[in-house]
Image 1 (cartoon, helix red, strand yellow):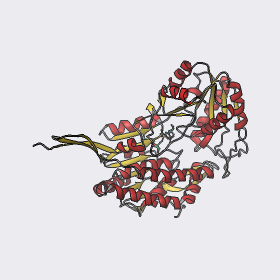
Image 2 (spheres, helix red, strand yellow; image 1 turned 45 degrees about the horizontal axis):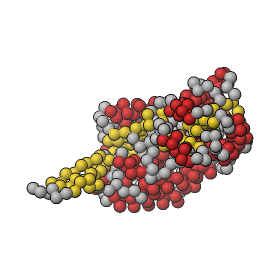
Image 3 (cartoon, helix red, strand yellow; image 1 turned 180 degrees about the horizontal axis):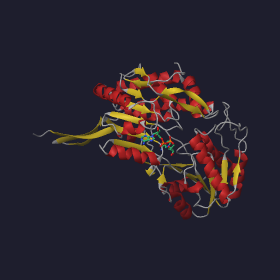
Image 4 (cartoon, protein in one colour; image 1 turned 120 degrees about the horizontal axis):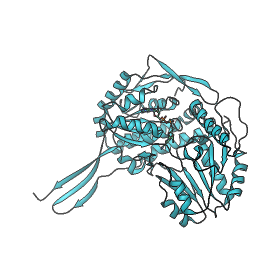
Length: 470
Ligand code: NAD
């Protein structure tokens, strides 16, 4: 596969646009190659092609759709190195993590292809048989953010396609490259119009969400944009799944193994330079171990390699806007006089790099506690009672993920059950699986993706009543 030129994929064809634009390599600030800027006419063409493909694809047996996704997963696996290298260039994550993302993307495609959404007989007696079945919705649009452009796209592609819905992928303008190549790679495995991709500027997302031919929008991104997507979809009652921002808390209990947990927490807070919706973003440590835990955490983050080497732990932030935003938060911390400790070794002079930063027990009302930083700056907070820490953890309008860390798994599970979040882990965080539903509580989202529950969000429910005694 050629990874140097980039096209929209419409009705199985590689297409160009009159105007083009480019992303920026965040490690160097140098321009990446040109990509299409789709127009409303491109949207029209893609939606009509998807609508035309819908009856055939919806009528294709589940096993055949599953087999096509598996063959596609094999093709992505064969192209792993090309995709990983391109991902480094557009997203900035070090090569070792870019490779992991492609491995996970293949795992997601295969994991979803393993699932079935069987009809359920909910009542059966001499008089009647009542069946609940799931039918595809129509054309779907997958809107993808810039932090995990490949795995998050695959997490929309596979559920849409397996349930019989053609999909149009719209990558982020910051990271359009791998998303376009995913659709290009798919051409031999799916009929024209079933799997398409359009890249564009900020006008493209609203144009797709407003299109009357689009039945469902699967959106991953910020809460602010999610609200706009829902507003647009509401005008014609198009279905939406919204996977939005969070502010995940980790509660470290007094009996936690300080060394092991500090290392794990640092990894889960700073992985992908903190640009993960379910990264640890607020670290609540029991007061009896607070100082020891902080010192271990600081000792560990001082060793983290921050640059664009293949084996670095942290690369740059993905774009200038995010770089400026996170630096603004750091300025706020310094202006407020909260003590921050930085780590990291090997930082280059150019590119959007920010050192891993721990903020030492800032007030609960400070911006760094209240806002999702989406960068490598994390507050460490002290707690004394379970009631108090649960109140602080839940006192937010988002609820994506959270974790509790303790040697007493039973007690930790009791605390976990009281947290208002879509995914709650004990002695783990940021772990996801294609067979497990993923979604947010409160302003972190609507609906869920993945697992059987996720597949259902790509379907209508039909209750079929068969009366036998007539
Ligand atoms: P963003 O909301 O700025 O953009 C996401 C996507 O929406 C991009 O493709 C963008 O082009 C598109 N978009 C922008 N305006 C639009 C509009 N009006 N209509 C339709 N589409 C539009 O988000 P981002 O900055 O790319 O991503 C970071 C955010 O995403 C963070 O808040 C993070 O927590 C969240 N996120 C959530 C999850 C999750 O699964 N819950 C996963 C990753 C990231």
